[in-house]
Image (spheres, rainbow, N blue to C red):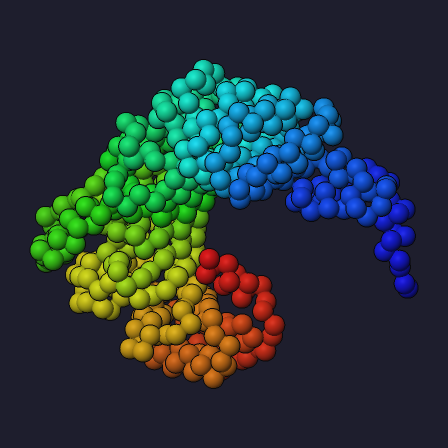
Length: 487
């Protein structure tokens, strides 16, 4: 059946057309005004305003002024203001106060050299607030009070807090129903303290990237937090860590450059010598209190550098009684020294996931791998893991280290029921070759371990020591998981 698109649009009511235009950048929505007399002012009724400018030219400023005047005091859902140049702060503040007066729900400000007006922080209607991504966007000491009674999502990127930790605490204390908080490039490594305190918070993401300094003091008082992403240098101290409801955590913690140098010196100086486990280890930092605060987590992701934090900055490995899924990122630069104790302290772990298997060879791996003679008690032979998932790189290493490591797992893990290897290569003979190598393992710890090798268009499955079955398919649910794991 043939439809005339012009007739379809002409039959729509004006409010519906304006609603559709609200999903376009405002400049594109305004371009529809030349279509006909009816369309001339339809764009002025949009409820989402999305302005972006690279030069803040007079024509752009006049366009924003004109559109806001046309809209009058009509209710507004969203304002996004992305100005890459340095705007006139007085002019921008007039726009912001105008939309606040109209009860805007979602405010996204990406500006540079701009002192945020105090009126933003006493809005009774804001549900979502995003601040930053520019230079010198400031939460000034002039903000005397904060009360955002409906704010549920707060996203802060590169905002300068003139009162540092005091100002940040003031901001959070005025958000009684805040559920999601994103912090990026906060610069709190120069603060005396930082406290993330919000009893209503459920989701927290922290991404900081200063490699030279350790924050002085970081606290978490978030008793209802369920999801955490935390990437930063470890703090010098964690006075308070209340994460009692945490379900899932992704950690990208790392040592500062000075701490890494001290850790490398310790290794070169016999850090993992024969008497290491009896004499105790020399720590280069202390994240023990924070790591202990994670003990209730059920799903845990650890970057390769976080394994280094566990090795050099934790007095004792925490016990994770609730942990059922653990993901480990691995690379050439970091060892697995902390993994033996970690796996032994996860008594209910069901699924273990490795993103890569190649790691720095040290004496501390125990029987987790066979790169060095056994130096500490076995951990794989007592493993309770049932599902092992391994994400291999496109090119399996030429020395066969990854294949040998997989064999080692299968030979040592007594309760393993399923091994899934995700291989991101479309060349089918390579996938067959990998599967055959895994089938040829002479000794297996678990009598009925199902092995799957999954690539973009091929899935091979076998139950040792039975025969191989194959299935040609388009990318399926399992491979979709693999693609997500690469992110």
